[in-house]
View (cartoon, rainbow, N blue to C red):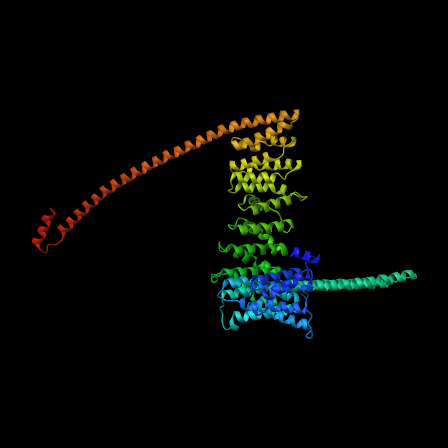
Length: 635
């Protein structure tokens, strides 16, 4: 578009070319018609006369929004026609004007496109193609319509009537609901832009009026001054009038802010559908399974949140919950939500700031598209000072080793731009980045590549000296030898000077217990090697002494490490022996218990037999024969 605009401005494209394009747009079919109309709109961005005439508007109506477009549901052509209509100015209502009559017909067709009157409810692809056409149609209405708020209200009311069948049904098709939410969100955003545009026009008109009054007063004062007398009362009157004008302007701005904060998504028509939208986005009962519906509703919620700060603050938790619960395969919803969060952070930074860590967390998304969009948003916000660069920047540092080359290049660009800032943000962030990266499950090679890149931006000697001291102070806080190895590597990458060497020597006790590790010793040995190259005679003695201490404690540390390992192994063997002994004791105890249980059982049986015999002997004899037989049997 920029290239064609410049060619038109320089008159490098003959007028005959546009005549041919009009012929193609009116006679061709399919993509050729849409492409010709789109090129015409690009040219009209510089020369409005290409489109803005009664005959050409009529041709645009017939070719771009007429019967052909409706029959074939050619949303590309409808979109191109709407783009071309955005190049003309706002129409002035005049029923006697032929041009306005044509524009009225165009506005009716634009409303039909925006409502999706020609969409098929059983064809998802048809609705997807409609989205861009509807967006441009609404934009065109807000450009040419004398009262766009009235036209947009009619569109919403018409869609609501079709959506719920005039109130006779409590359910609706998911594609219809998707289209309704899309129109609802985009209309709300355009109403905000339109309101601010009207406010700007009023402000400019008042400023122009005040400027004219000031010029008239200055001329009058000049005349009186030349005449030899200047009335101070006139000056006071002018200043009072200007003060009143300033108060009026402030009141107008307050009213505009009140409209955007409370009217558009609060007391207005769009606000009535807020609860429905929130219920769909929340999807607590998992009633809504349509992917396109969830995408459309989430995007509409984001647009409504861009209008009102209170509405934004209230529903930010819902938006992040929807982002977290999005299906893994729905990358479009997550990517769109991340971009919308960037817009929200730009418009309402204080409201979004507490959720910044959750925005950084999207850099770990499984989708390359989502990670790329997240990094683009964060880069834009950070470089425009809309988001404070904090410890979460280590997430961006991780992007330096991302699988996608565009993400790697973008993260490099961000750090390169940060390095140009006067307050040295990279220097201030490096200690936290080192600590957080060393605690992550990241490969040693990746960690070292990232830190080598970032430490390359530390150019000033003072920063190198301070960073050496800060990193040394972090050794006692490390919980593993690998973290100490990472710190030692970072110190070795810094440029050393006399003060740095003395700092390392003075803080020897902070890292001496880690010198048994080969990586740690190797890093400090490399620093010694670099220091010897530039050392003065008086510094060499300090370096030699420091090197000796490094070697001695490395040897002692290795011996302690070996002894510690032996102690651990001995402790493990002792634990095994104790476990075996306990097991043998338990087995013997169980065996003894089983033996005692057996003898006790026999004793119980004997007692029972004896008692039964006594009972038989003492019982009265009813049948002597039978009783005697029983006695003999027992005997």
